[in-house]
Length: 309
Image (cartoon, rainbow, N blue to C red; front, side):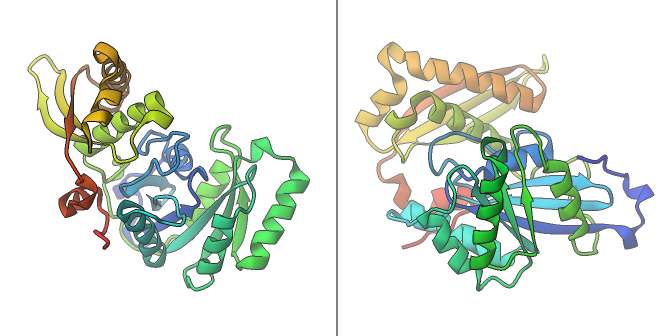
């Protein structure tokens, strides 16, 4: 994205800042797009549905504007309390944002879940932008038909066709979002790329590797929390994290035979976290059973979710 100007070179009266909520069905490409716009990894990405749980805010500096991207959980028909909390949180941020972007996976098209989102969006008064994602996988005539169909359902101010993987359309989208931000002072330091504490982001990275490693075997209720974070004299960082599951049988899945699975997860997570913090990392993972943690209000507070009944 464009280089951020220093506060001294951007008079207060020229500064702009605002929130953009990215919503869509699961696996629409929200987290991948956030990372592409920010230019760094601030949101985890996997092929598993509902990877994003906690609200992630990526911060983009584009010219004299600061864009705070709100990566929300995918919207779908909720069945469990955790599902309900994620869907409710996604819509809450859509109604609170300065602009709402609906992402539609161009290859998948308008599914039943997307139809319901389009219907709900008609009651959202904020300016709306349609983003067709993964457009590198679809031929142009299909894209035009998809954009037309979506705009018949809900009126969008503009439509962008982007591929976060190739970067196609991403710079144009960034400039558009910057121009649409309301006038006002920047809300974060210009070198900050996310408002998530480093401990939480590190835990999310480990959960990403956990998901990638186990995928279908992974219990839906597995989660990760950073328990200790210590900077050592030699410049490295020692991190202890707990992987929480709800039953002993799930613990065995995460550990793997003779602990091979959790060691592989630790190795890949350690490498990703080291890139994030810019220092060597010593990562220690402990798999713990926490029965019915999805009914614990405190866990929802940590993730920034509303504890729904």
